[in-house]
Amino acid sequence: MYAIVDIETTGGHASANGITEIAICIHDGKEVVQRYQTLINPGREIPVYIQALTGISNEMVKQAPYFKDVAYDIYNLLHGNIFVAHNVNFDHSFVRHHLSTAGYDLQCNKLCTVRLSRKIIPGMASYSLGKLCHQLGIGNSARHRAGGDADATAELFTLLLSKDEENHIPTALKIRSKEQALPPNLHSRFIDKLPPTPGVYYFHDQKGKVVYVGKAVNIKKRVASHFAGNNSGAQRQEFMRHIHRISYQECGTELMALLTEAVEIKRLWPQFNRSQKKLEFNFGLYTYEDQRGYLRLAVDKRRKYSVPVHTCSSLLDGRNILLRLIDEFELCPKLCFIQKNTDVCTGANKTLCACEGHEGVNDYNNKIANAIAALKQTLPTFAIRDEGRKDDEHSCILIEDGRFYGMGYVSHYFEVNSLEQLKNHLTPYPGNDYMHNMVINYAEKYPWKKVDFNSIHNTEIHV
Image 1 (cartoon, rainbow, N blue to C red):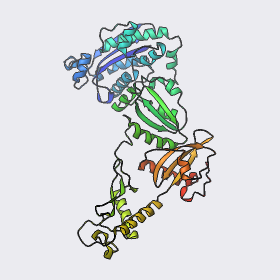
Image 2 (cartoon, one colour; image 1 turned 30 degrees about the vertical axis):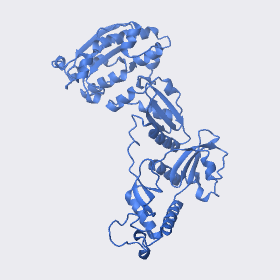
Image 3 (cartoon, rainbow, N blue to C red; image 1 turned 120 degrees about the vertical axis):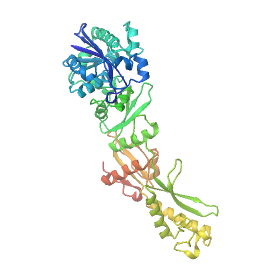
Image 4 (cartoon, rainbow, N blue to C red; image 1 turned 45 degrees about the vertical axis):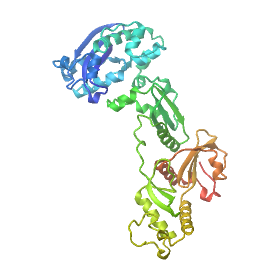
């Protein structure tokens, strides 16, 4: 037996909203044999726009039973039957959540008439209940009311049963079938073609816009995990409604997938990605020429389009670097913004203090140049050469002067003879400290996969 359900609610997700009306049509596979319908007091105000859509007002449900008062009847109508609805995950999430609150654990198979309609009667202009029924000549005298929509869904389901020549309905009901857990607008073919390899996957909305980017060691398994469970929260319900298509990009390793995910989130700024979208308040060491011609060093927050001579994770980290350079190269602490008072300069060379103009511009600027050159020599330049997407290629990630440069794939037989030669085979990407630290940590964990350009004579790599 099939229980065809439609509900009206106060909002779009079960955990924070109530049901205002429910209708259930019991279908024996040929016709409707029993009907149940009732208004329900949701225990909260019905938003004005919901009242306008459904015609159900606060006054109408004032004397209606609370869900807990009819939970026993609803559970007995649904228990042991197949739960059918148009966009079944929405209705099922509400009913299951409120039954659970009332002390009932609903466990039943589900069928979605949106998904079934796409398979059994393909090529329709729209699969929303109203437009689909209009195209098929199915009447509905009470649109956006539970009774009218449940009756229309029951008539649609009868039609689907009669036209199911390829047995899509029995297939969907198989124990191993996960299709009913999929978003209503996502065709299962997108899941079927996903590979069990490392990579990045993209969820697209109806217009093709990317709304979520994720990384995976196994793309197929990770994507399927998004649709498991019965989370009735607002974020998940909104997320599921927006997924219409999936694309993917295979990567050679999990590290390549992590880096690609970070690049794509910054590039696409997807609606449902929460991580890696926060502003990064890291710092940089900058140099500029003052009005007298002296080069000055300063630590400041990194800003868009600015290019620091060195990056640092905090203001304290930058200050410590400056103190070391001041001591090692006899720089002026005032011109480096370390000493900010009007007292006598505390620099090592007080008799030739640059801040007082006693040290020549060229001499002092040469010190700054030497300090910056020494600082850059401490920055690592290396590549990570690792597994590729195919047997005849390797993945390659480059850190240049302590910064993430880019990544790509090279031939299995490619030999690293020079830094510039390797860069010609890689794609540059904007990096950040998150990406840089991932590569640094990976190099420390797997040193045999590292090509050190500070000692390029040793280029033997084991993968």
